[in-house]
Length: 254
Length: 254
Image 1 (cartoon, rainbow over the protein chains, first blue to last red):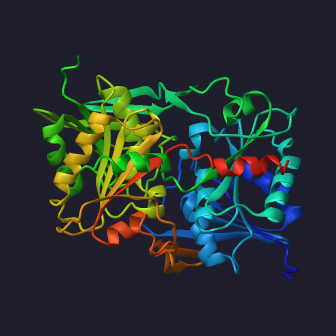
Image 2 (cartoon, rainbow over the protein chains, first blue to last red):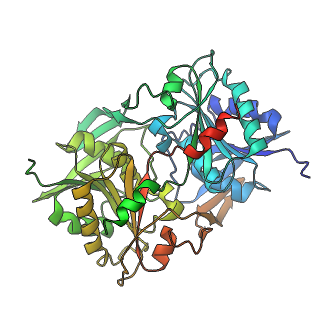
Image 3 (cartoon, each protein chain N blue to C red):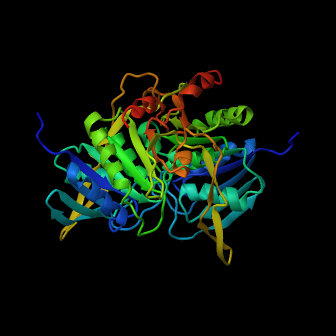
């Protein structure tokens, strides 16, 4: 029998100084031994990016009872890979990303460094969960999420997750949460994504912005609907991206 | 009836000066009007990363009959988003990434900037294909891939692809290609990923490396098997990453 407390690896993409990751550690602390390895600068929009053309480095920031904190010069995915191989003495029971300052539902799952953390944990065969709040405010109020996070994490520690499968959990920005919905990833599209910033000579400068258009409206199964209606959205997410339904058809093409 | 030649947007993650993208343009030129918007520096391992904290810029490099080339300071995904919104006069008929110097089969689909190009095209509703060669050599020989690329692109221009679905095409590094296999994404895991590079004071430096272990061996359906056995591997790939089989089970948890 294993008498050790669960070991939980935590990272994010807003960086080590973000409020969201401190709040997450506070919520998780009663559930296990926590090791944090998070980027030393904000890395929003990192997705599953890796640092391949230069070395990266990490430093121990502090070691308290039950919580050890490192900062790392790499991407969110680098943080997870580096912690798993060089810092942790055993495979963690759980990898957790977040709490992200900003919505990672719908197609945002592809751009999110927080979900990069989760996808890397999942690719390594470890149950993994990402938590995000629909607010970009640095001082956002994460308190309503706390009991939900503890409940979801406890359930995953108890039951595990199937291979190649992780959870993408998003909270609406309200204290009045209506409960949990198990969701599908909303379909939709980002539009008007560039602010014309400046031109210098023949060099054209643009800054990323944009509006998300949900093309899947009134679908009560999707995560965007859940968030818009005050629910916590749990979207089970796979790292096997094979489009199985197309295999048979493609075989007739060649 | 549309008498215009197909418009094909090309990008990559090895950067504008890589041999692979020049070869790709050469192969595609007979099939349509080509616009290239590619990173001005190598961006391997960019995945779906975006530049969110600073403006990016692009410049026209040259405009020949049928081929217009821009370089861009952003990530591969930035390149696609920027070209679609600010450079192209109409929605392209196809987005193509590559030819990547290096294998993007199996779990590498998650780390690949070439597949970032393809995923962004697909998220925008445009048929999209990524091409990669299993060789990291700067002077790699792409010639055997040419006829296959023209065949695959012609088929996709003719038949289209279903919503939320793109193609990840990988070539083994041989002139003796045995034909096309329609594949599933191989399961497997990267191991021994960090080279201990140096330590300065309390700062620990590591450089990314690693060995891929195929945990899915002898599965003739997977892309890793196809490449190891001399076939061109086409893996249909989805951007809807919902893990549908877990939805029912999760509903019993909460």
